[in-house]
Amino acid sequence: MLVRRVIRAFAVFSLVALHAAAWGQPKTLTILHTNDMHASFMPHEAFWIRTTPRPMVGGFAELDAVVDSIRHVNPNTLLLDAGDVMTGNPITDLDYRGAQGGWLFEFMNRIGYEVGTPGNHDFDISQRNFEALTRVAHFPVVSANLHDTDGRELGACIPYTVVMKNGLRIGIVGWMSRDFYNLVSQRSTAGIRLDTAVTLLQAIIDTLDQKADLVIALTHEGVDDDTILARRVHGLDLIVGGHSHTRLKHPLSVNGVVIVQAGSNCENLGILTLTVEDHRITKYDGYLKQLWVDGSRPKSPIASLADSLQGVIDQSYAKVIGTLKTEWARRRGESNVGDFVSDAQREATGADVAFMNTAGIRADVPAGPITRRMLFEVLPFRNTVVTFHLSGAQIRAIVRHLLGDGTRHDESVQTSGIRCEWKPTPDGVEIATLEINGKPIDDRKEYLGAANDYMMGESVRYLGLKAPLLTDTGLTLFEVVEQKIRTEQTIDARVEHRIRRVDE
Image 1 (cartoon, helix red, strand yellow):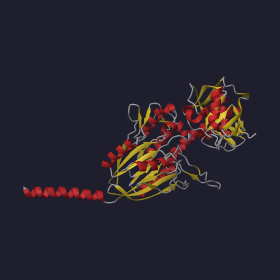
Image 2 (cartoon, rainbow, N blue to C red):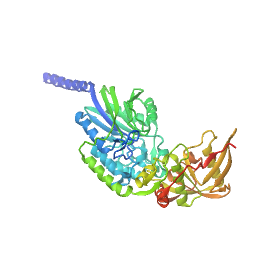
Image 3 (tube, one colour):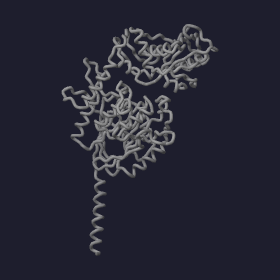
Image 4 (cartoon, rainbow, N blue to C red):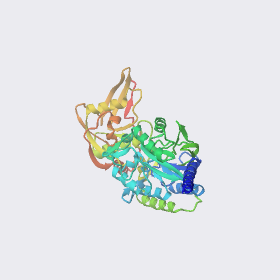
């Protein structure tokens, strides 16, 4: 009996020792990562290439082919996405399984994504639609710091997950930007609680450290905040980030934490190879693979699905709605497209003045025919037009807010209905003239204003005043601008210098 006990004890000791030795052995892992794809499911021209014709880059078919080829050579791969799958292409209008834009997540299912985290633009349509998107996903959507007001996860989100690859237990936690409320319209953030306390994240990292050999934060906050985060926590091995559209050609290392990000618009696939030993990364190498379209490759099921959906989009969005005599060109400060969009809101509502946030204008359009698809790229958000009442004194205060101290004109707002001439003084600025629709402003008069709902949700930041009572017209910004184009047909928009400095 004693001999049996000794043999049994030796066998158990041997198994434990072998198990410990196995975990102590170096193991390799390849992490493939994307971020900020912004609905770029089809290839597009590489705009930065000067030669013509420009080569085509990106799209889910090319992404799928590259991911598949890497997996074929190395099955120990993990495919992650760091948010902002949505917004940028009319495919987000198409319904799939009860979610507008759901086809994008179905593509990701078929490509074989294994974990994702939300981006701010994934909430653009609505909170309910975001939750429906998480239910389309066959992969875990991790988000540790977004909850409803009762502390429950949103949709099918979970705070973190643990996956196995090549014998490695990999803990992955999701983390949303502290600027979430400033990035998403108030109608989509209503009822959502954001917790940015590092103590929350540290507690989860501590939990994962007991369960996993490698701890990854899948973040949507930008590379600058990622570097700050890396310095403020311990026990974290890797940050796979998004939001800032940063093309990190090679990984960063901050406080022992490896940081990667892969640009935007599905133009690159991030590839990071790790060696993990004794619960830490002992070696790493990473780069970005440009997703140049290979026209000689046989058409895949992903490519066929993409083509069919593009056909559905083209039936509606390929239609020409007008002609631009001059290019719509964004620029710092007032732009011709900014003037046009602002005017469209004012005219559609019969308002006296209108405002447009410059950053909400997302693309330039060359002179020539303009299609609904081109306009969608300019105004991809679901913002609605709202109206509100302002006194003349409030409009004057808004103009002063935009002028600041005169050394730096606020470039974040486009205007309509306002004409102002100002000049610098030793004490700041002096407004020489201020007119509303060609008439001197009356500080005691009430005027009707118009803007999009997102901008007015951030009115303190943009206009320097708390939003007055808003009336939602039910019209989207896209609709009112499209109608103005269709009505005018030939557009010759010019920069009108509506708020102009004079020195005499």
